[in-house]
Image (tube, rainbow, N blue to C red; front, side):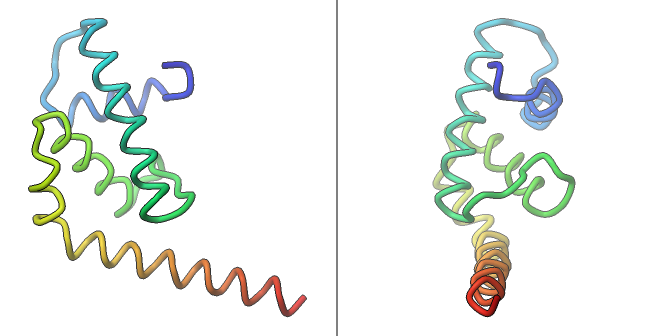
Length: 103
C-alpha cells in the first residue's frame, strides 16, 4: 500500500460508500486502485489521476464500478468520457512529439 497515497485510498473508499476501517477492505481497495492505475496507463498513457479534474473523476468511477464487479457497465456508461479523454491525451502526445522533433 506504500505507493498508493492515503488520500487516494480515502477518496476511493468514499466513492464506493465504504465508511468502515478494515484491513481486508483496504487491501481490496488498494488492489482495485493498482489495477485501475495499470488500466488507465494502458488507455491514456501516463496521467496523474490524483489531480482534480475529469480524469480523476473517471478514475474514481472506474474504481467504484470495479468494487461492485460492474466493469462492463463502466465501459458502456462512460464511453463518451473515455473517448474524450483518449482524444485529449492523444493530442497532447502528438504535440509533445512534434515539439521534440522540431527542437
